[in-house]
Length: 81
View 1 (cartoon, helix red, strand yellow):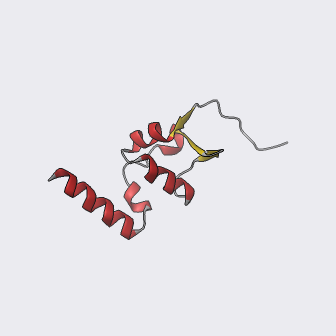
View 2 (tube, rainbow, N blue to C red):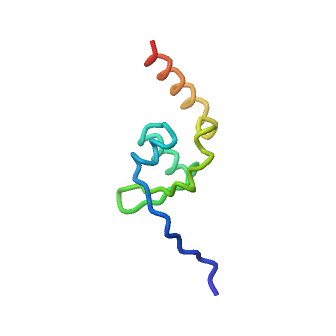
């Protein structure tokens, strides 16, 4: 017997999932491409389950490399000023 479990949880698109994490959709797609966030590629589109994103919004910057995290911090600081 297979260990595969079918999920009835709906998929979120990149915009919806990024809004949950409060990051840009392209950042979320990059994290998924590098395997740092669970995402599913459907053709050219990315899809995400809310349950896979839970708990990620507290420390998503720690999943980024230090250069990317630093650039993000600088860009948000400039945006506030």
